[in-house]
Length: 191
Image 1 (cartoon, one colour):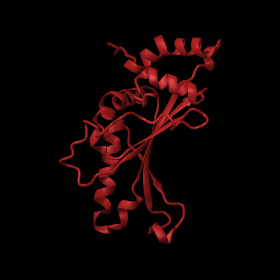
Image 2 (cartoon, one colour):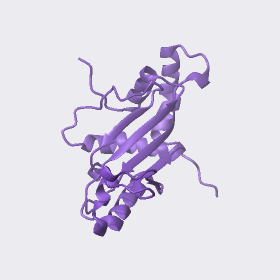
Image 3 (tube, helix red, strand yellow):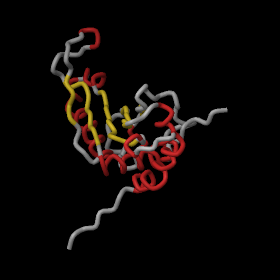
Image 4 (cartoon, helix red, strand yellow):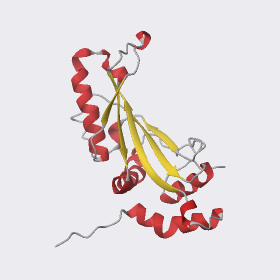
């Protein structure tokens, strides 16, 4: 018996309501002109934590496990390209973890980000609407991993943040803001 495939909730919302609304609002006659989510890139820099050689492997494992737990995908290690004495960085030393998620995992991650993680941010007053680049991609940073409900903070030895980049195709800042706002992204209200 074959398993039936269920589309993620936000993807269904996007295809049924948001994409047609965006086409109508921005006057886009061709379906390929409508802005759509392409991928989400999660990046976590660990260079500043690696000064203590005794905790190096513990930090390495903790960050890798956190990203793997929140995204459902194992991250890759980004190594330093240059040695910089002032920052105590050596060429070839691990400096960050990165993961790129697409398709269903991307939609599930975005759903959990909007509905579970962002509301748990301490003193949250809305996301900045100025964090779009010229191509319409949105970037945000989380200061600690405690906002994710799947992370057990009792087992974590130190706190770290992560950068999240939401990449949209066929877009500009205005179109991207419309799509993300309709998906439920809580931007700061303009007064």
